[in-house]
Length: 87
Length: 193
Ligand SMILES: [Zn+2]
Image (cartoon, rainbow over all chains, first blue to last red; front, side, top):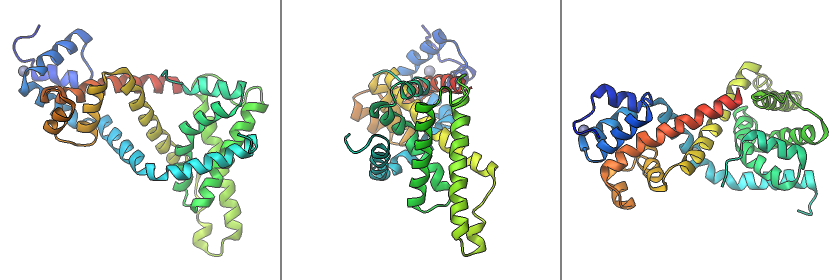
């Protein structure tokens, strides 16, 4: 169990998914009770490229919810072409 | 609920071709194909027609042919991309014959551009799939904290209060969920080849 704060380098490697799982769990446990490390981790992952991609994808998916009616209708149209109207 | 990989999904369409397997296939690929068709600058009606034509072609290939594409892992994406590109170009040719202006005729753009659009939509659908799969592998409160805080930009204090967890736990949810999501994504990309 880690009593003092992990180094910035360790936090950085954790954020970049470049540390083994025991160390990762220790960092997580430590950060649960250390505001400073928790905030550093959040800041390090804030610049994550994958997170940016996730944000954009979710934003798009949110705005596509309005388009779900369109997709439903399209799906039914294709299904009736494929399987007839008995479905 | 278990995760249906696209390959098992393809297999079930090939084997029974029935509405249930089909509906799942549509759920997974319909939105991205519609996004792809819309990017080509068609009217909404034409975009939907393109999606319909792609999906009918997929269905036909899967139920009628022994092996519509090279069944080694990773070939489905390029096969589908080829079918989708072909249907977009068909639609463009149809529209170009009716085109009255040079500008409309210039809709006949090149293959590289179509491939780029397809890749974009494919990646986006893949990312959403990864988040769904990740959410099933992780403590629901941790995943919710991640989505509210890291994705939707809610304040850590508000999220902590809403979910009844500490503010630190909200901070950590970001790196924890991202870590899992990265692994899920890597696996999915490896499956695609
Ligand atoms: Zn610390």
